[in-house]
Amino acid sequence: MSVSVLEAVCGTFAICSLCKALEENKQIKDLMVFIGRHTLLIFSMHCLDWIAVDAWMNHRMWIRNVVRTGMVLGCSLLFYEIKNAACHVFERHAKN
Image (cartoon, rainbow, N blue to C red; front, side, top):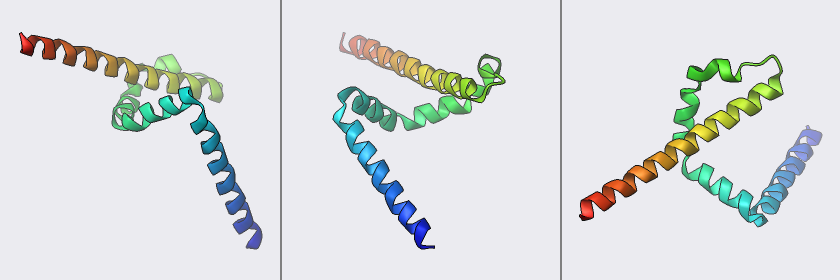
């Protein structure tokens, strides 16, 4: 029992130390902030990833996970950019 508590404390300390180290890197920090702010959009794209199942299905698990994650994040970013572009067009149109 005491070993598992010690492992949990050490694991928590390791994760906190990793997060502090990642926070110092501006590019990783900006990526994590973007993902945190757009979690619902990313989750929505994840729910729709069955549409492109042939693109990410592979016998190797790590390839499947990397391709699927890349597709979900890429589609989320693409949708985000299209939405922002449309909002800017509508804002300019409304001003005129």
